[in-house]
Amino acid sequence: MSETTANTETVAPAGLAAAVGDLVLDGSTGERAVVTDITHGSVYLRKPGPVGTHSWPALDPALLVVVQTRADRLAQPDGGLWCDS
Image 1 (cartoon, helix red, strand yellow):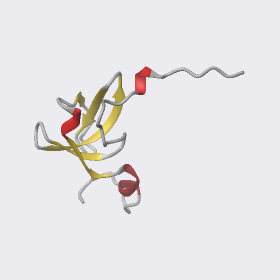
Image 2: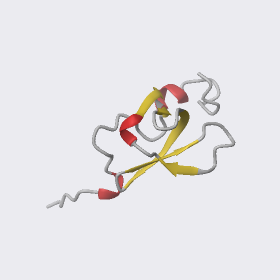
Image 3: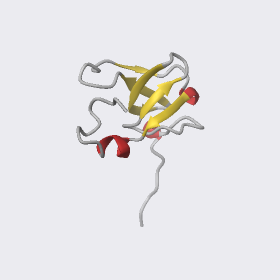
Image 4: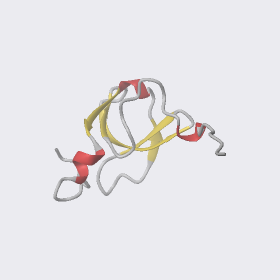
């Protein structure tokens, strides 16, 4: 018999359309960022490209608009590293 438990650490906020790895436009700040983590109902972002090492929580996850999905980014010749499209 298997036991099913809810993993509250990865529960996304209600209405969140973005997933980890997606390039988003943050409606709170107007900046583009990559979703790096969704933990305890918070969504964490970082600047796209090689300089984006610092991450921060999104002010309002409901205002994140997906610009490019992770799958679409990975299909690019550079693997979506630069997020220029």
